Image (cartoon, rainbow, N blue to C red; front, top):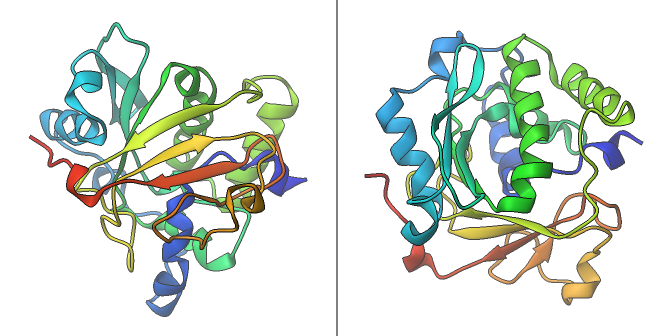
Length: 229
């Protein structure tokens, strides 16, 4: 049940679990200041997640001591922000769970209008629970409870998010990885895409295959990676 309820996440973070497990695992949070960024730097990093044609009109949220706040209002329905370690999986491989405590993690993403209404509230809640000191199990339980109560929107249609930043840090062993599009594809399984390799150069279904929360990752041309400016 927990796996079903917590499928919407940064699927690419799962690629780094083994490398992180080989280092010294962390099981406590760093001071909050290590998760925060200067305002202008965070806006620049967030807006590097997608093409300028999108980001120049997108809403931008930044992390503050009281959670994600709007730094700039947009008018195209997209929302760009930089996810932290709290967005990492808390229900799959044990190694991946350590990413929740990885303070340097910076994962810029720009959600399309549908994802801004459905996926974004999930990540905002995860950040709030992480900032409150909740461990991976408690984050998972908090999300599950909120979903069961209808406090989080259901995901019953396709949505997407751009992740093109060249300066992202998805954790040890992954770093910036490569530009890609996250597509939230309810009930998809990897065989529907040809059974492509997880973490490879072809589209693949990662977490929660066959559930309403299935995530498809579509790698794109590496030259599309964008630097924060």
